[in-house]
Amino acid sequence: MDNTSKIPSYLSRERLGPWETYLVQIDRVEPYLEKSLLPWVETLTRPKRTLIVDVPIRLDSGEIAHFEGYRVQHNLSRGPGKGGIRYHPDVTLSEVMALSAWMTIKNAVVNVPYGGAKGGIRVNPKNLTLAELERLTRRYASEINIMIGPEKDIPAPDINTNEQIMAWFMDTYSMNQGKTTTGVVTGKPLSLGGSLGRPDATGRGVFITTVEAARHLGIPIAGAKVAVQGFGNVGEAAARLFAEAGAKVVAVQDETGTVFNAAGLDVRRLKRHRHETGSLGGMAEAESIDNQDFWACEVDILIAAALENQITEDNAGRIRARIVTEGANGPTTPAADLILQARNILVIPDVLANAGGVTVSYFEWVQDISAFFWSEDEINQRLDKIMRDAFNAVWASAESKGILLRTAAFVLGCERVLLARKLRGLYP
Image (tube, rainbow, N blue to C red; front, side, top):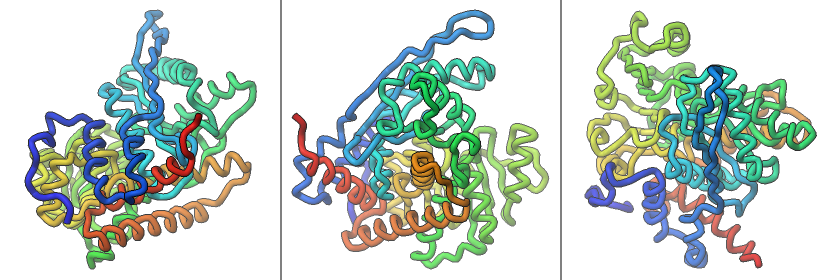
């Protein structure tokens, strides 16, 4: 197997930001790349285009507030940029650069014709009124207007953004174009060209890839114990699909706390409780436990669907799962990766596991361009095939080369990107 259980000092969690984590991943995959592509590898370590913008808005009080926004296009060799927009107080340029790069790899792994991009604003949207949030979105859309377009760069929802924000974004772009341009964003409301199946798409992709991995390991899904970190769109959808397949979702964690039930939680009821009370805690038949104890739950499958850097060298040794599936982007640090490998825990990497969202975003974009829309069953069937084919291609590569799934996924994605870069050549 590639790598060892020894953790180099430069992989310490305190030393690595998101972009540095991505660069470590590229370093690890380079020895396995096709030799004819190696002259182009540095392409992957340099974002094509980075934009930092000031986003001033007038608050309801009449005061002017300034927020910092970003849009990064990492690589456009295989098609227009694609990647979400997040509103979060901890958004940084390093984070957005890394997320755009992971989008490049992710799009290539599932073979959709996109490059990688990402955007964000450093803001706590909970501190804004709905009117202020609309003004923030429209101003940000105007500021990055020079980079986006249905054939240039197509944003989508991410953390703390949703279909309403995408509707405002699309409308702002359309007003500047003088025509309705639904294809400039995905994740829109259905009435504005959104796609059926999009809300559950990322969680469904997590479920599909985990089922495939469990099949290879001989783990029946019916009766399997599952723990889910993150109970937003991704984590909730994944938890619901596992429960419907007969698995027991025994632990769920979000920013409000952690709940546990050895016999299995009622996922739909937990979602209603979370919506009504604003917290996971307090529901009957759901015991509240310490957040750190979540990692020690004895389960077959652990879904990490919250934020980056959640599985670290501090807690990776406590995990008692056979499969860790990365529903979030970058939830496992490089140091933790080595610990999980040494403990023979299979990790399904983010660039494969959570690609269901961008795959159905691709379906939405195609439907907008053609003005012809598919049924939800058609979308789910297409998604199922793409995700299973991608997983099995990565699994076969990992088996034949004796490498980790993450390394195999990066090999597949990087080689597709670098081949496109090589064939296109340099202009002028």
